[in-house]
Length: 412
Image 1 (spheres, one colour):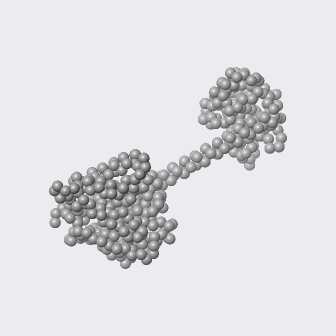
Image 2: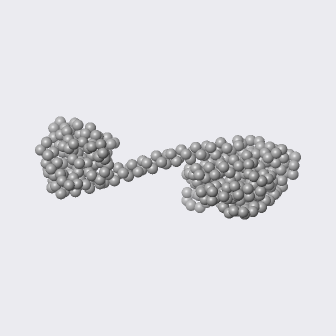
Image 3: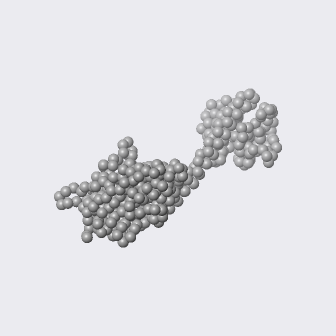
Protein backbone atom coordinates (compact mmCIF):
# COMPACT_ATOMS: atom_id res chain seq x y z
CA UNK A 1 0.00 0.00 0.00
CA UNK A 2 1.08 3.61 -0.38
CA UNK A 3 0.66 6.71 1.69
CA UNK A 4 -0.43 8.98 -1.15
CA UNK A 5 -2.84 8.96 -4.05
CA UNK A 6 -1.58 7.94 -7.48
CA UNK A 7 -0.59 10.82 -9.77
CA UNK A 8 -3.25 12.22 -12.09
CA UNK A 9 -3.10 11.81 -15.85
CA UNK A 10 -1.68 15.31 -16.34
CA UNK A 11 1.04 14.86 -13.69
CA UNK A 12 4.53 14.05 -15.00
CA UNK A 13 5.55 10.45 -14.34
CA UNK A 14 7.31 9.96 -11.00
CA UNK A 15 10.98 10.72 -11.09
CA UNK A 16 10.90 12.66 -14.38
CA UNK A 17 10.65 16.11 -12.82
CA UNK A 18 12.64 17.96 -10.16
CA UNK A 19 10.44 16.74 -7.32
CA UNK A 20 11.95 13.70 -5.53
CA UNK A 21 9.89 10.52 -5.46
CA UNK A 22 10.49 8.63 -2.22
CA UNK A 23 9.54 5.02 -1.47
CA UNK A 24 9.84 3.88 2.15
CA UNK A 25 10.00 0.10 2.73
CA UNK A 26 9.35 -0.65 6.43
CA UNK A 27 7.10 -3.20 8.11
CA UNK A 28 6.02 -0.77 10.87
CA UNK A 29 3.13 1.57 9.90
CA UNK A 30 4.05 3.92 12.73
CA UNK A 31 7.45 4.51 11.08
CA UNK A 32 5.72 5.02 7.75
CA UNK A 33 3.46 7.67 9.25
CA UNK A 34 6.34 9.35 11.05
CA UNK A 35 8.40 9.64 7.87
CA UNK A 36 5.38 10.87 5.90
CA UNK A 37 4.92 13.72 8.39
CA UNK A 38 8.64 14.52 8.35
CA UNK A 39 8.54 14.91 4.57
CA UNK A 40 5.26 16.87 4.46
CA UNK A 41 5.14 20.54 3.62
CA UNK A 42 5.61 22.91 0.71
CA UNK A 43 7.74 21.51 -2.11
CA UNK A 44 7.81 18.16 -0.28
CA UNK A 45 8.91 14.94 -1.99
CA UNK A 46 6.24 12.65 -3.37
CA UNK A 47 6.06 10.06 -0.58
CA UNK A 48 5.04 6.41 -0.99
CA UNK A 49 5.02 3.70 1.65
CA UNK A 50 5.35 -0.07 1.24
CA UNK A 51 4.73 -2.21 4.32
CA UNK A 52 5.33 -5.62 2.74
CA UNK A 53 9.01 -6.29 1.90
CA UNK A 54 8.01 -9.00 -0.60
CA UNK A 55 6.06 -6.41 -2.59
CA UNK A 56 8.85 -3.81 -2.55
CA UNK A 57 10.32 -4.54 -6.00
CA UNK A 58 6.94 -4.52 -7.73
CA UNK A 59 5.97 -1.32 -5.95
CA UNK A 60 9.24 0.34 -6.88
CA UNK A 61 8.83 -0.81 -10.48
CA UNK A 62 5.40 0.81 -10.67
CA UNK A 63 6.43 4.08 -9.00
CA UNK A 64 9.86 4.80 -10.41
CA UNK A 65 11.29 6.29 -7.19
CA UNK A 66 14.29 8.60 -7.24
CA UNK A 67 15.18 7.53 -3.69
CA UNK A 68 14.37 4.36 -1.71
CA UNK A 69 14.38 4.38 2.11
CA UNK A 70 14.96 0.81 3.26
CA UNK A 71 14.63 -0.52 6.80
CA UNK A 72 17.14 -3.21 7.66
CA UNK A 73 15.20 -5.18 10.28
CA UNK A 74 12.01 -6.73 8.91
CA UNK A 75 10.37 -10.14 9.32
CA UNK A 76 10.66 -12.87 6.65
CA UNK A 77 12.67 -10.69 4.24
CA UNK A 78 15.19 -8.44 5.94
CA UNK A 79 16.65 -5.24 4.52
CA UNK A 80 20.04 -6.73 3.67
CA UNK A 81 18.49 -9.42 1.46
CA UNK A 82 16.09 -6.90 -0.09
CA UNK A 83 19.02 -4.56 -0.82
CA UNK A 84 20.76 -7.44 -2.57
CA UNK A 85 17.65 -8.10 -4.69
CA UNK A 86 17.28 -4.45 -5.66
CA UNK A 87 20.86 -4.25 -6.84
CA UNK A 88 20.58 -7.55 -8.72
CA UNK A 89 18.04 -6.00 -11.12
CA UNK A 90 19.22 -3.65 -13.85
CA UNK A 91 16.25 -1.28 -13.44
CA UNK A 92 17.19 -0.56 -9.79
CA UNK A 93 20.98 -0.73 -10.10
CA UNK A 94 21.45 3.03 -9.95
CA UNK A 95 18.47 4.08 -7.80
CA UNK A 96 19.78 5.64 -4.57
CA UNK A 97 18.97 3.43 -1.54
CA UNK A 98 19.27 4.97 1.89
CA UNK A 99 19.43 2.28 4.55
CA UNK A 100 17.60 2.97 7.85
CA UNK A 101 18.85 1.17 10.94
CA UNK A 102 18.14 1.35 14.66
CA UNK A 103 21.82 1.50 15.57
CA UNK A 104 25.20 2.66 14.36
CA UNK A 105 26.86 -0.72 13.83
CA UNK A 106 30.10 -0.55 11.79
CA UNK A 107 29.82 -4.17 10.62
CA UNK A 108 26.24 -3.80 9.43
CA UNK A 109 27.07 -0.48 7.83
CA UNK A 110 30.04 -2.01 5.98
CA UNK A 111 27.90 -4.89 4.72
CA UNK A 112 25.19 -2.51 3.52
CA UNK A 113 27.65 -0.38 1.59
CA UNK A 114 29.32 -3.47 0.11
CA UNK A 115 25.92 -4.52 -1.28
CA UNK A 116 25.32 -1.16 -2.90
CA UNK A 117 23.69 1.08 -0.31
CA UNK A 118 24.00 4.76 -1.21
CA UNK A 119 23.69 6.08 2.34
CA UNK A 120 23.12 4.96 5.93
CA UNK A 121 21.00 6.70 8.58
CA UNK A 122 20.05 5.79 12.14
CA UNK A 123 16.30 6.10 12.40
CA UNK A 124 14.64 8.29 12.91
CA UNK A 125 17.00 10.99 11.68
CA UNK A 126 16.52 14.72 12.00
CA UNK A 127 13.97 16.05 9.49
CA UNK A 128 16.37 18.61 8.00
CA UNK A 129 19.09 16.01 7.52
CA UNK A 130 16.70 13.47 5.99
CA UNK A 131 15.30 16.00 3.51
CA UNK A 132 18.79 17.18 2.60
CA UNK A 133 20.02 13.64 1.89
CA UNK A 134 16.89 12.73 -0.07
CA UNK A 135 17.22 15.82 -2.27
CA UNK A 136 20.95 15.29 -2.75
CA UNK A 137 20.60 11.67 -3.86
CA UNK A 138 17.50 12.42 -5.94
CA UNK A 139 19.25 15.20 -7.87
CA UNK A 140 22.21 12.94 -8.61
CA UNK A 141 19.99 10.11 -9.77
CA UNK A 142 17.81 12.37 -11.93
CA UNK A 143 20.93 13.82 -13.56
CA UNK A 144 22.21 10.29 -14.20
CA UNK A 145 18.91 9.23 -15.79
CA UNK A 146 18.87 12.33 -18.00
CA UNK A 147 22.48 11.76 -19.03
CA UNK A 148 21.80 8.12 -19.86
CA UNK A 149 18.73 9.12 -21.88
CA UNK A 150 20.81 11.66 -23.79
CA UNK A 151 23.52 9.06 -24.46
CA UNK A 152 20.91 6.58 -25.65
CA UNK A 153 19.37 9.16 -27.98
CA UNK A 154 22.86 9.95 -29.29
CA UNK A 155 23.58 6.26 -29.79
CA UNK A 156 20.36 5.79 -31.75
CA UNK A 157 21.09 8.88 -33.81
CA UNK A 158 24.56 7.60 -34.61
CA UNK A 159 23.17 4.22 -35.61
CA UNK A 160 20.70 5.90 -37.97
CA UNK A 161 23.44 8.09 -39.41
CA UNK A 162 25.74 5.08 -39.83
CA UNK A 163 22.94 3.22 -41.62
CA UNK A 164 22.36 6.20 -43.93
CA UNK A 165 26.08 6.47 -44.64
CA UNK A 166 26.34 2.75 -45.33
CA UNK A 167 23.40 2.99 -47.74
CA UNK A 168 24.97 5.98 -49.49
CA UNK A 169 28.31 4.14 -49.76
CA UNK A 170 26.61 1.13 -51.32
CA UNK A 171 24.82 3.39 -53.78
CA UNK A 172 28.05 5.14 -54.80
CA UNK A 173 29.72 1.76 -55.25
CA UNK A 174 26.82 0.54 -57.40
CA UNK A 175 27.43 3.40 -59.86
CA UNK A 176 31.09 2.51 -60.43
CA UNK A 177 31.49 0.29 -63.49
CA UNK A 178 32.78 -3.19 -62.66
CA UNK A 179 36.46 -3.98 -63.19
CA UNK A 180 37.20 -5.34 -66.63
CA UNK A 181 37.64 -4.23 -70.23
CA UNK A 182 36.62 -0.75 -71.31
CA UNK A 183 37.13 -0.23 -75.01
CA UNK A 184 40.72 -1.22 -75.74
CA UNK A 185 41.79 -0.82 -72.10
CA UNK A 186 41.50 -2.87 -68.91
CA UNK A 187 40.34 -1.28 -65.65
CA UNK A 188 40.52 -2.31 -62.01
CA UNK A 189 39.86 -0.32 -58.85
CA UNK A 190 39.49 -0.31 -55.09
CA UNK A 191 37.05 1.85 -53.15
CA UNK A 192 37.13 1.89 -49.32
CA UNK A 193 34.73 4.47 -47.87
CA UNK A 194 35.75 6.08 -44.59
CA UNK A 195 33.56 5.71 -41.51
CA UNK A 196 31.98 9.11 -42.20
CA UNK A 197 31.92 8.65 -46.01
CA UNK A 198 33.81 11.18 -48.07
CA UNK A 199 32.77 12.44 -51.47
CA UNK A 200 34.80 10.17 -53.76
CA UNK A 201 33.39 8.82 -57.02
CA UNK A 202 34.97 7.65 -60.25
CA UNK A 203 34.29 5.91 -63.51
CA UNK A 204 35.33 5.24 -67.09
CA UNK A 205 33.47 4.65 -70.32
CA UNK A 206 33.99 4.56 -74.06
CA UNK A 207 33.11 7.83 -75.79
CA UNK A 208 33.31 6.13 -79.19
CA UNK A 209 35.33 3.37 -80.85
CA UNK A 210 38.54 5.35 -80.55
CA UNK A 211 38.25 7.26 -77.25
CA UNK A 212 37.88 6.24 -73.59
CA UNK A 213 37.14 8.70 -70.78
CA UNK A 214 38.69 8.13 -67.33
CA UNK A 215 37.72 10.29 -64.33
CA UNK A 216 37.82 10.54 -60.54
CA UNK A 217 36.45 13.26 -58.28
CA UNK A 218 36.56 14.07 -54.57
CA UNK A 219 33.96 16.36 -52.97
CA UNK A 220 35.07 18.42 -49.99
CA UNK A 221 33.70 17.30 -46.64
CA UNK A 222 32.11 14.07 -45.51
CA UNK A 223 28.70 12.55 -45.09
CA UNK A 224 25.63 11.90 -47.17
CA UNK A 225 25.59 15.44 -48.61
CA UNK A 226 29.08 15.05 -50.09
CA UNK A 227 28.13 11.64 -51.48
CA UNK A 228 24.99 13.05 -53.13
CA UNK A 229 26.99 15.76 -54.88
CA UNK A 230 29.59 13.26 -56.07
CA UNK A 231 26.82 11.03 -57.45
CA UNK A 232 25.28 14.00 -59.28
CA UNK A 233 28.60 14.94 -60.87
CA UNK A 234 29.38 11.32 -61.76
CA UNK A 235 25.98 10.90 -63.39
CA UNK A 236 26.38 14.08 -65.46
CA UNK A 237 29.76 12.93 -66.77
CA UNK A 238 28.77 9.34 -67.42
CA UNK A 239 25.56 10.30 -69.22
CA UNK A 240 27.37 13.08 -71.13
CA UNK A 241 24.54 15.52 -70.39
CA UNK A 242 26.55 18.71 -69.82
CA UNK A 243 25.45 21.29 -72.42
CA UNK A 244 27.89 22.61 -75.01
CA UNK A 245 30.61 20.21 -73.88
CA UNK A 246 33.10 18.22 -75.92
CA UNK A 247 33.68 15.17 -73.73
CA UNK A 248 36.83 14.33 -75.67
CA UNK A 249 38.36 17.60 -74.42
CA UNK A 250 39.10 17.35 -70.67
CA UNK A 251 39.38 21.08 -70.04
CA UNK A 252 35.96 21.58 -71.64
CA UNK A 253 34.45 18.99 -69.29
CA UNK A 254 35.88 20.62 -66.15
CA UNK A 255 34.75 24.07 -67.27
CA UNK A 256 31.22 22.74 -67.87
CA UNK A 257 31.17 21.08 -64.43
CA UNK A 258 32.36 24.32 -62.86
CA UNK A 259 29.38 26.09 -64.44
CA UNK A 260 26.88 23.34 -63.60
CA UNK A 261 27.85 22.80 -59.94
CA UNK A 262 28.70 26.14 -58.30
CA UNK A 263 29.28 25.81 -54.58
CA UNK A 264 26.65 28.51 -53.85
CA UNK A 265 23.96 26.09 -55.01
CA UNK A 266 25.42 23.04 -53.26
CA UNK A 267 25.70 23.99 -49.60
CA UNK A 268 29.17 25.47 -50.04
CA UNK A 269 30.64 22.24 -51.39
CA UNK A 270 33.16 22.13 -54.22
CA UNK A 271 35.26 19.26 -55.53
CA UNK A 272 38.55 18.25 -57.07
CA UNK A 273 38.69 16.17 -60.23
CA UNK A 274 41.00 14.48 -62.69
CA UNK A 275 39.57 13.79 -66.16
CA UNK A 276 41.45 12.12 -69.00
CA UNK A 277 40.70 10.83 -72.50
CA UNK A 278 42.78 8.15 -74.20
CA UNK A 279 42.86 8.03 -78.00
CA UNK A 280 43.58 4.56 -79.36
CA UNK A 281 44.86 5.55 -82.81
CA UNK A 282 47.48 8.01 -81.60
CA UNK A 283 48.18 6.29 -78.26
CA UNK A 284 47.92 9.68 -76.60
CA UNK A 285 46.30 10.55 -73.29
CA UNK A 286 44.92 14.06 -72.83
CA UNK A 287 43.98 15.18 -69.33
CA UNK A 288 43.00 18.14 -67.18
CA UNK A 289 42.61 18.50 -63.45
CA UNK A 290 41.14 20.81 -60.89
CA UNK A 291 42.85 20.85 -57.50
CA UNK A 292 43.32 17.08 -57.60
CA UNK A 293 46.42 14.98 -56.88
CA UNK A 294 48.35 14.12 -60.03
CA UNK A 295 47.70 10.82 -61.72
CA UNK A 296 50.75 8.60 -62.26
CA UNK A 297 51.58 6.93 -65.57
CA UNK A 298 53.97 3.99 -65.10
CA UNK A 299 55.59 2.77 -68.35
CA UNK A 300 56.95 -0.79 -68.42
CA UNK A 301 60.53 -0.74 -67.08
CA UNK A 302 63.43 -1.15 -69.42
CA UNK A 303 65.70 -4.15 -68.76
CA UNK A 304 68.03 -3.44 -65.88
CA UNK A 305 66.28 -0.19 -64.91
CA UNK A 306 64.01 0.62 -62.01
CA UNK A 307 60.41 1.45 -62.85
CA UNK A 308 59.63 5.15 -63.17
CA UNK A 309 56.47 7.18 -62.94
CA UNK A 310 55.31 10.12 -65.01
CA UNK A 311 53.19 12.55 -62.96
CA UNK A 312 50.19 13.87 -64.84
CA UNK A 313 49.79 17.06 -62.84
CA UNK A 314 46.43 18.46 -61.88
CA UNK A 315 47.13 22.14 -61.27
CA UNK A 316 43.80 23.65 -62.30
CA UNK A 317 41.45 25.45 -59.89
CA UNK A 318 38.96 23.71 -57.61
CA UNK A 319 35.78 22.81 -59.47
CA UNK A 320 32.71 24.75 -58.40
CA UNK A 321 34.62 27.16 -56.17
CA UNK A 322 35.06 30.17 -58.49
CA UNK A 323 32.79 31.21 -61.34
CA UNK A 324 34.25 31.65 -64.81
CA UNK A 325 37.73 30.20 -64.27
CA UNK A 326 39.53 28.44 -67.09
CA UNK A 327 41.08 24.98 -67.14
CA UNK A 328 44.03 23.89 -69.25
CA UNK A 329 44.69 20.49 -70.76
CA UNK A 330 47.88 18.52 -71.33
CA UNK A 331 48.71 15.34 -73.19
CA UNK A 332 51.28 12.59 -73.13
CA UNK A 333 52.24 9.69 -75.38
CA UNK A 334 51.47 6.40 -73.65
CA UNK A 335 54.11 3.69 -74.13
CA UNK A 336 52.64 0.25 -74.87
CA UNK A 337 52.03 -1.82 -71.74
CA UNK A 338 51.85 1.21 -69.42
CA UNK A 339 49.64 1.40 -66.35
CA UNK A 340 47.81 4.54 -65.19
CA UNK A 341 46.88 5.22 -61.55
CA UNK A 342 44.22 7.80 -60.73
CA UNK A 343 43.39 8.25 -57.04
CA UNK A 344 42.00 10.48 -54.33
CA UNK A 345 44.13 12.06 -51.61
CA UNK A 346 42.72 9.50 -49.16
CA UNK A 347 44.92 6.90 -50.87
CA UNK A 348 48.11 8.45 -49.50
CA UNK A 349 47.15 10.96 -46.78
CA UNK A 350 47.17 8.26 -44.11
CA UNK A 351 48.08 9.25 -40.58
CA UNK A 352 50.34 6.81 -38.78
CA UNK A 353 49.42 5.93 -35.16
CA UNK A 354 52.66 7.50 -33.92
CA UNK A 355 52.12 10.67 -35.94
CA UNK A 356 53.20 11.76 -39.38
CA UNK A 357 51.61 11.05 -42.73
CA UNK A 358 52.53 8.88 -45.68
CA UNK A 359 53.93 11.25 -48.28
CA UNK A 360 52.92 11.49 -51.93
CA UNK A 361 56.52 10.70 -52.88
CA UNK A 362 56.43 7.46 -50.85
CA UNK A 363 53.07 6.58 -52.37
CA UNK A 364 54.45 7.22 -55.86
CA UNK A 365 57.39 4.91 -55.20
CA UNK A 366 55.07 2.19 -53.94
CA UNK A 367 52.94 2.36 -57.11
CA UNK A 368 56.02 2.25 -59.34
CA UNK A 369 57.39 -0.82 -57.59
CA UNK A 370 54.05 -2.62 -57.74
CA UNK A 371 53.57 -1.83 -61.43
CA UNK A 372 57.19 -2.74 -62.19
CA UNK A 373 56.75 -6.11 -60.53
CA UNK A 374 54.34 -7.10 -63.28
CA UNK A 375 51.19 -9.11 -62.79
CA UNK A 376 47.58 -8.05 -62.71
CA UNK A 377 46.68 -4.58 -61.47
CA UNK A 378 44.33 -6.04 -58.88
CA UNK A 379 47.16 -7.71 -56.96
CA UNK A 380 49.02 -4.40 -56.71
CA UNK A 381 45.86 -2.63 -55.52
CA UNK A 382 45.34 -5.28 -52.86
CA UNK A 383 48.93 -4.81 -51.70
CA UNK A 384 48.29 -1.07 -51.53
CA UNK A 385 45.19 -1.54 -49.36
CA UNK A 386 47.03 -3.86 -47.00
CA UNK A 387 49.92 -1.40 -46.77
CA UNK A 388 47.57 1.53 -46.12
CA UNK A 389 45.76 -0.33 -43.35
CA UNK A 390 49.08 -1.29 -41.82
CA UNK A 391 50.24 2.34 -41.87
CA UNK A 392 47.03 3.39 -40.13
CA UNK A 393 47.50 0.74 -37.47
CA UNK A 394 44.37 -0.98 -38.78
CA UNK A 395 42.30 1.94 -37.45
CA UNK A 396 39.34 3.19 -39.55
CA UNK A 397 40.46 5.37 -42.45
CA UNK A 398 39.79 9.09 -41.98
CA UNK A 399 38.96 9.64 -45.66
CA UNK A 400 37.72 7.60 -48.60
CA UNK A 401 40.45 5.59 -50.27
CA UNK A 402 39.79 5.44 -54.01
CA UNK A 403 42.25 4.27 -56.65
CA UNK A 404 41.72 3.34 -60.27
CA UNK A 405 44.25 1.38 -62.33
CA UNK A 406 44.08 1.40 -66.14
CA UNK A 407 46.21 -0.98 -68.21
CA UNK A 408 47.04 0.09 -71.75
CA UNK A 409 47.53 -2.49 -74.48
CA UNK A 410 51.03 -3.75 -75.08
CA UNK A 411 50.59 -4.39 -78.81
CA UNK A 412 49.92 -2.03 -81.69
